[in-house]
Length: 114
Image (cartoon, rainbow, N blue to C red; front, top):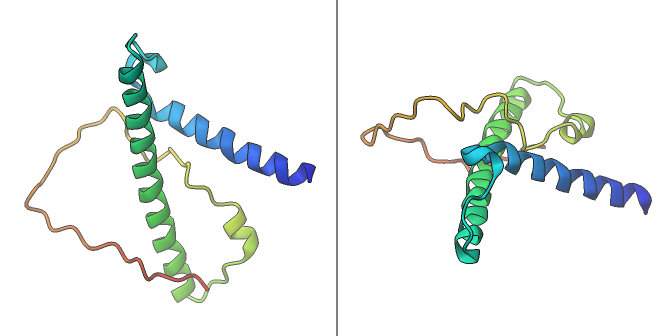
């Protein structure tokens, strides 16, 4: 039971660190003194975190699928070492250009890892 609780606590802490890392405006301080505005800031930060997690999971799933197609074994140990809270590839302060004419490939929801 202790091991299960510790694992769940670690996941929560990892998520909280991820959200804190993504909240880069105002050095992690919510400057608003109005409760509903504070609530908005927290919810927007969680939305950004969820979008980053979706991006990470989709990218990791694609790599795992490629590995599987190359015949590399994907064990439970490999999967246990993965987490959607990676930040090394995210450039928070970089240039963000939008190309609204670019065609975006559809997300593959049917990808299965066997």
